[in-house]
Each structure stands twice: as structure tokens, then as C-alpha cells.
Amino acid sequence: MKRVFSGVQPTGNIHIGNYLGALKQFVELQNENDCLYCIVDMHSITVQQDPATLRKNILDVAALYLAVGLDPKKSIVFVQSDVSGHAELSWVLTCAAYTGELSRMTQFKQKSKGRESAPAGLFNYPVLMAADILLYDTDIVPVGNDQKQHIELTRDLAIRVNNKYGETFVVPDGRFLKSGARIMALDDPTSKMSKSAENVHSRISLLDTPQKIKKSIMKATTDSDGVVRFDLENKPGISNLLNIYSAFSGKEVSEIEKAYEGHGYGDFKKDLVEIAVGAIAPIQERFQEIRESQELLEILKDGAERANAISEATMKRVKERFGLGY
Ligand code: AMP
Ligand code: TRP
Image (cartoon, rainbow, N blue to C red):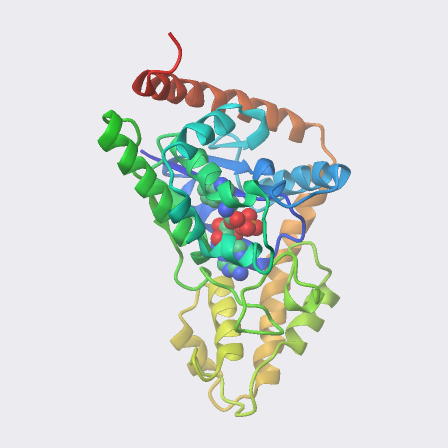
């Protein structure tokens, strides 16, 4: 059995990019692997959060994890700040990381753009992520494409520590899906779909109403040539919609192109609305039920205990290797 770890930030507006790039893989992996899925609340405070909203969002993501199909009997579902090993290991890894490599992270560069000085948490964000992963001897990290550079850094840190202090960490691999790994914004297919974009029609959130989903898809940017064909360079809008269609339906893009030969974008979009709403509606039904249940808190408490047990064993090893304590 392989160890799988991944996390999602509790920052609201979980969208189909998060679902098709990450959450869908989480569910697929849980049957044959030993999985931990985390709600990374400490990552989310690298950008200032309203405390009450953050608390609500933590439980929303936990409920969404279960609603998309994570089974607490198979997977450990927990909140990052419930396990102190994340912060502890993060400090140790900070001492193994270089400011040069951290300054090269594209996410940091984007988030700190135009500022003379940025929050140090934003700079250290990828080190905390490496700690999340290495704390559990993780083999596989299912994520979207945007996390590739962070996974590379995690591997570099693990290898560096292993070379300097002796075998300490498992070196993990990222796992990226073909059609869901990079879902683009519906209003601008050159930037990725994001939780924080101002235009609500740039994304489809998992908690959107069917009317909203329909409106967002029907408004989605395409092109004027009217042919349903995948061509990322010249037809980024329709290519993004084809990716979404493929990821939701499980059909190959070539198969979908063929089915819409001689049809316009209108027909294609209408069908996509049906497919997306059909996939999202049952998730929402389960979400409401789980979100209001007392069981959710028990699942998180149990998850934290199980995660803690694994994390303590790793921290003991790390402290020994580094000579910490006495
Ligand atoms: P975040 O919301 O930043 O915590 O991201 C949670 C997960 O969703 C990570 O695995 C991301 O790589 C993935 N993800 C975020 N945005 C997208 C997107 N537009 N397309 C595909 N995957 C995404
Ligand atoms: N940085 C990831 C994102 O924004 C979230 C994350 C934090 C994560 N820790 C992780 C993902 C560990 C995978 C493994 O999407």
C-alpha cells in the first residue's frame, strides 16, 4: 500500500478546478492506498483571514471532502492545525531550505508582486507544504498542475536532508490528471480558474445553484469559428470547456469532438450544463446533510488523533537525526 497525502486550503468557493484537478483523484486513490486528506488552515493564514469566516470554511471543506466521496473509514480526514507536527517540521525544513530557491517559486512571485516587502508566511508557504507531505512518509501527492513546482521543492528538501543527515524522509511523487489538472477561468481561458477572482462567472463553485452554473457556462468565452475542436493555442476557451466535459464525463476529448461535428457551441454548452449540474447536484445534497451533522466533528477529531500518531513517529526520527533535544 502506498501512502497518499494531499490538502486543500479552506478559503471558500471550492470550484470545479479543485474538484477535477484534486478532489476527484483523492476519491479514486482511497480504495487501494493509505490516504490522508488535510484541510490546510495554516496555509490559508498566509493571507489575512476573517477568523469567523475561516472557521466556517474549515468545516465547509471538511463536509465537501466527505460529500465528494471520501470515506473516513478508508481515509484519514483532518485539520492541519490539529496536528502540531506540521508547524514543528516546517521549522526544521526552513533551516534546510534556501532563500534563493524560495524566491523562485512562481506562486510566491505572483502573490507578492508589486510589494516591496511580503509576509514571511507567504515566502515560507512551500516549506510548510513540504512539511505536510514529508511528515507522513508520503509516496504520492495528488494535486493540480499549479503545485508542480512545490512538489519539486519538497523532493529537493527530502533528498537534501537525506544526504546530509542520513535516510530521514521518503521522496514523494506528484500525481496529475490528464484532463482536470489545469482548469482555466471561464471568462479568461489564459488564467487558471481561481477561488478569489472577482467575476463569479469565471468559475463554477461546487456550491453554485444550477441556474448559476448554466449562466456561467453559457457566458463562457469561446471564439468565432464555431467548431468544437481542441486547440489550446488558437482556441483556448473551447479547449478548456472540452477538458471540463471530458473530466466530468470520462469521455476522451477526441470522442467528444466527433460527437459535436456539425453542431455549434450552443448545443455543446447546453449538454455541458447538463453534465456539470448532474455531477454537482448529488454532491450538494450530501454536503448539506453532512455539514449540519454532529458526526463531522467526530470524524475530524478521530482523523487528528490518527494523523498525530503517524506524525509523532516521524518527528521522533527527525529530532534524532538533527540532534534536537537531549
Ligand atoms: P487550493 O485551493 O489552492 O488549496 O487548491 C486545492 C487543490 O486544487 C490543489 O491540488 C490545486 O492544485 C488544485 N487546483 C486549484 N486550482 C485548480 C485549477 N484551476 N485547475 C486544476 N486544479 C486546481
Ligand atoms: N498548496 C496547496 C494548494 O494551494 C495546498 C497544500 C498545502 C497541499 N499542503 C499540501 C497540497 C500538501 C498537497 C500536499 O493547492
